[in-house]
Image (cartoon, rainbow, N blue to C red; front, side):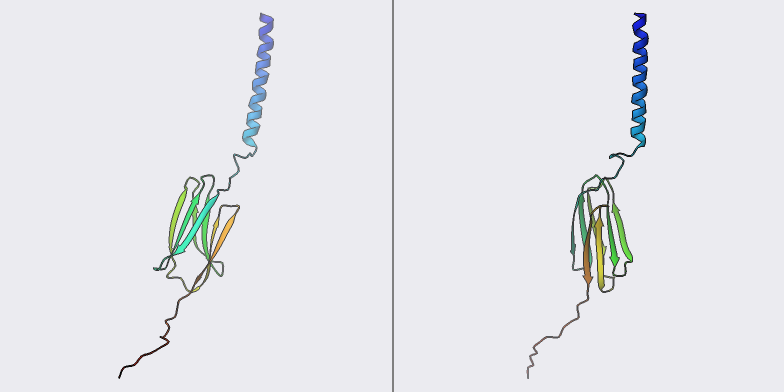
Length: 135
């Protein structure tokens, strides 16, 4: 019996040492769990008559999504990150104070980027095409 216990103890300790070293290597080396996964998302945008831009984002909880608004010169006017645990985001931007021009709203999950162009233009009042005068 004594002759059987010593080889079993040696075999068990060698197995334990090899398993612990393989777990240590897995923890140190980068794996799929460490890398960030791009979240699939859906987005929608519309404007209101008050001069506001509404942005709606619905996404998965596997990653983050960034929303940026830039002008034609590339200057960033707005930036917001939708967190990893957040599924839905609703934003309302007031664009009534911005000057006329072309702006871009980009929505990115780190892999895919959706860019929407927005043109702000003030409509000039027009005169009536027909005038009626009474005597």
